[in-house]
Length: 291
Image 1 (cartoon, rainbow, N blue to C red):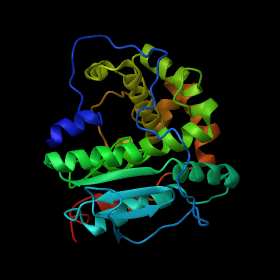
Image 2 (image 1 turned 180 degrees about the horizontal axis):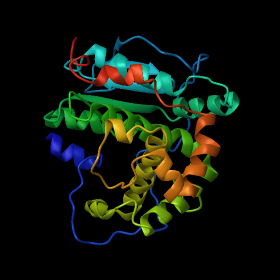
Image 3 (image 1 turned 120 degrees about the vertical axis):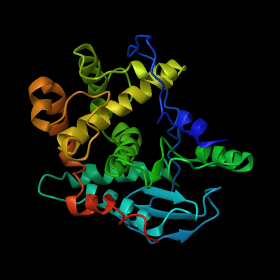
């Protein structure tokens, strides 16, 4: 299957239409494993080396960090994989505000539900029919909610966004279910509804996702990302300037959507933190394209 079809499957490219979309009560956890049967290592903060693997076909190498396994084919540079891994490690740095027990619970969930992020080279990647079937198999056996592409514009956003999708869909969903759960009873659901109603979060583009429960899961997933990314004040320096999300800064978030800002402040700093600017700067320019 060609790249375009897979991007539709992972909801990275969504086609606009005039139909009004609302966030309804039905939510489908289509990309998250239902059973917590993954292996949990003694060192939850493990930052492993890149290893050759045959366990995630059609991918040929892997790198595990803080409960997330990055997988790629040989055309993806090792340096890029290491930089993505360091970004994840940065998010789980322990600081004065960290609730270590809660953070360890989140990391354990990432391992238990086998959280995996595929990495592809560029926007024009392809899968043969055989590779497509193999990837279907890998997706069915792991929690795989999106992909990361190497060597694309907006590289910082590309990396941080898709890491956060997996942390929220798996880790936050299971660790802070009342606050960040992918359900119609969570605080995330309530603040997402508010942002949509006030016109700060435009969700009409998600009409391309025909299955309502999956569409609602994606709407919640994306809003969790936008709140955290904006609260970290990454949107203004790294973009995107034009998007479905109108708000640009943490100050603006606090002013216009105080409940969203408060939910972030009361929960997220306990378990994850903004990656270091030094780490994010590795994705700017040509530094991430070297072997």
